[in-house]
Image (cartoon, rainbow, N blue to C red; front, side):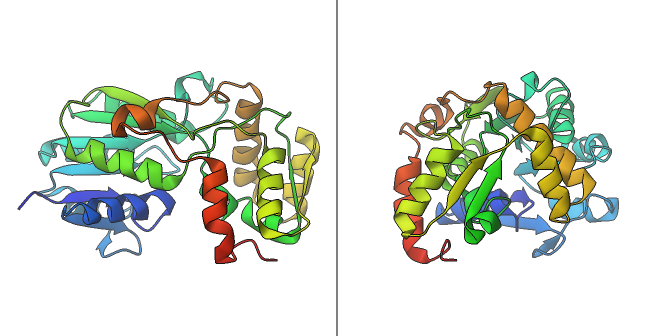
Amino acid sequence: MDADISVLAGSGKSGRRVAAALRAAGHPVRVASRTSEVTFDWLDASSWPAVTAGAGALYLVAPGDPAPLRPFVDLVQEAGVKRVVLLSGRNADEWGGRYGHAMVAAEDVVRGSDLSWTIVRPNNFMQNFTEDVWHAPLLAGRLALPTGGVPEPFIDLDDLAAVAARLLTSDGYEGRTFELSGLTALTFGDAVAMIAAATGRQIRYDEITPDAYVEELRADGVGEDWVTELSSMFEVLRDGINAAPAPGVEQVLGRPPRSFADWVAHIAPTGVWDG
């Protein structure tokens, strides 16, 4: 029997899909989070050995506060974990300190370790339209964002999970960084129009200024930390550094990533966008 593969944030958007992809391929998995079968808490170091002891590989999702990263990675090394796949973000080395500080810090810590590491850097997820920040506005019939009209090649989380599962279970990817995206780049306006057409609903996309976006987030009761994170993310998006499709999915899996149109056609009948 292969050694277990530990999946951090195993109840989260990417982690639960990575765990499912590994299990579907017959690999033993430890799903770890504060609410999963293996309890893991970044702020409680006594919970860490349950993730690292005897594990052969680890899917690493950085905490919001990067302070625990270095001692945790030290423990991963001491435990003899052979392979680590780190989730980061597209072109993280070009963010210039404006966004994603924990992900950038995690890259630095992992690269500076003696681990056999691989880093995946995806674009924004298609599932952000169904499970997260843009879902509620779509249900309400209006999504308003400060994108400057810059397109985004959204990635299906199932593609990300398939890539991560391959990297966690295969040799030959050590010390490499893969930029991951979907098949084609779309503006958010185009993406919303596709969702509206698939659902038969009137859903409007409004392009707004960065200041107006911050005001709307605050009016909706969003906390200041999350306001800063979201507004900074769109500042990076407007630079256009993540606008072109990336080759990582095909480099690892030998097939193209899923298109946004195909994903919408598959998801819309589930009723997730029925307001």
